[in-house]
Length: 350
Image (cartoon, rainbow, N blue to C red; front, side, top):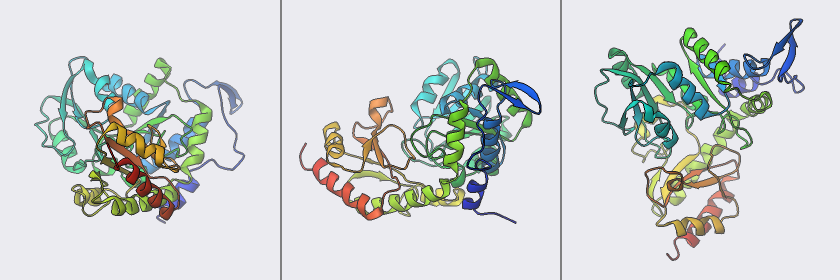
């Protein structure tokens, strides 16, 4: 029997509301076990995320810890790495010791000859551009390169890159997977069991281990991912319609008018609540946030509460007034009214 998303996320949760938390030292099968190389609480969440991704999951204490472990396992100094020029800026900083080719997510892409790893980000953060994962994976494999996809924005319910031909999925579970803006966590899912084992060895040796309580919280949050994504996408659609013509650079891949929509609809299973748009200045962004009663200034996204982040302040090569907006789970009518009221304040003067 094929199960729906809601059933899958609920039944990959902790086995019962009172399921035990395995911490640093615990007993398993009559033996004392130390929690750095493996942990029962991690394994429960890894099993759940691996099932949703369609691969074998290795958990890390953050999304950046997951990416850095992947780089250390797969790359040597001088190896060539393809990265999105419009993707997460810290990934580009991390990759500075390698030979990096930066390409816009929407392309065009160069030959992958001589490339060790192609890291894609679709939809990209913060630009929300989309690339053809299946086509690029086929081209990369023909040249002998591995393909990883940062799936943070899409989530494992919104997109399954491993089914599209990618070798690796990496994600920050701090965002929509945990969903309550109270956990920092990340993971890598792979189709190659030997690569999963190398990643676990790297995690043990480096000490980049997730906290059991954080893993437990994320697993609990995962159970409502289906419900949260549905409301967030509903809110994003309502905001896109309400804000069209009022702000510049409005992007949401779930809108038929968006330039990424046709490809996104082809390879994504569902959309989420992340939009981007531009306000004319830093002062306008500040006025928007001061006027809003429902939108918080926050650098993360995918949580219950709507939030806005001015991305240029963190080093993204974007206009000063570009905002990444994360639609939360508020009532759609309330959120639209609040955002339009805040926009009127933001755009009133400069």
